[in-house]
Image (cartoon, rainbow, N blue to C red; front, side, top):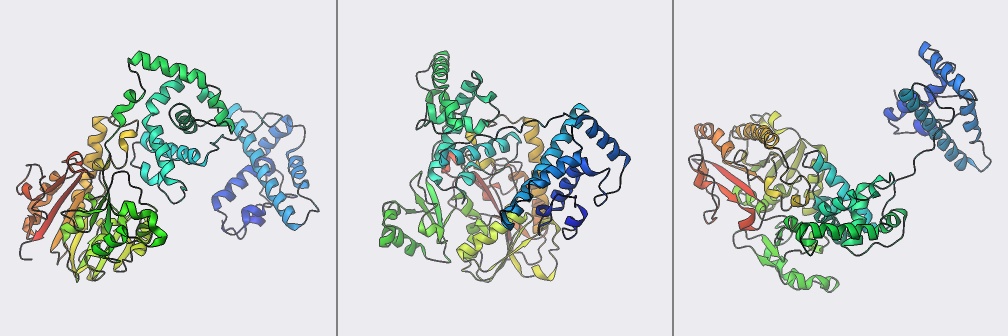
Length: 559
């Protein structure tokens, strides 16, 4: 039903439902409003609908158990909206009254569905959830809530870093620290809370309790500001008593000995110089001697070092926070792991090439290829997720990659024999994978499910991913003028790596392709599961200090 006729169709005598008929109101909201109001009006309100047997029975139930007729409730609430305070206040009150009618109706409907009868008086609405008074703690609690929900559902949702470093986070470094520290101590915090009644408070969300208990016992302290803080602080002595008992039972002196398994070694921070905006020499000069207005970044910039193998990758000390760095915000530097920079260099594209990035979003590899091509040629970037594709477009605009043509599409559904792709010479195929190699950078070692996934569940997921990866690779190899293809994953599982390459190798060879070695000096090679495994690249998180990665290059023999 269109919003144009919504007000007329849902009109009820004496009640304005204009807020639900405003431009842009959803049909779902309108239908919900209609259903709620119909609890009262269905049997006798002609402008609303025809009387029905179900509606009449509902009305009789209302009439028998309520002191006033339902219409009286509607008229009473509508009467409140008649005010001489002016048009704006009148509209606001009318909107509030309509929402009140909706809530009353929904409450009555809920009671009727559960108990089979209606209560004579409306129950009091539950009190709003308590939140942390500190903005840092409040945002950290929100991040923890999302991370734990994603972890419980066994889905690779947004990572700790992506949540704590999002644009809406004001104090990114502080929120990131509180989030990580709370998750690090979470096993201990949960044990302590299980011995108290704190989580029995309905208004106190678990994530809020986790953050405040962390602050109280292991952090900066818990200031008594709001209801949540007071509730936690009132149990300080009890929590400390339980903590001492826990340490005694585990025969350790300090709580860090209980959580040491969750502590991971920090890696050096890496960033890629965006060659579309400046050269590596220019970037180093700026970093070592920034303009006067950015002098606070000089000390960090002077510690930057160029990677020995990838000439456009810079290293910074571990723990360096570069998210607000001027060169990052203007797109001259791109925060990207060294492993993630390998595929573009492995492709070694020529400036005049047409390139396809089959599963492109969020676009770091896509923009890297554009930079290596000097902004020339054409890069077709495909992703089936609309929101991720918008992120790719935003990233491309930030770095000035105008040669990228982004389109929402499922790569497997594309006709690669069409005129559009006749000149494609290179392909980057980095499909969806388990992400097992990014466990460190995603901070997965802090999550409760770490190591708890059932082997059968993991196997089924890997088989499903490998089937898709194999189809995508076979599809990409059919491009008529393809010269070089890079297949990469951020996985450490052979099922997604060597076995996928092995599955397509015979077909690839029949099409005139062979496995090529993109980095002769790289020390770690593919597992000996197929011919040519010595040309495959593996990145080990522990040995190489970056995300676990796999790279395979298919090169046409005559190219």
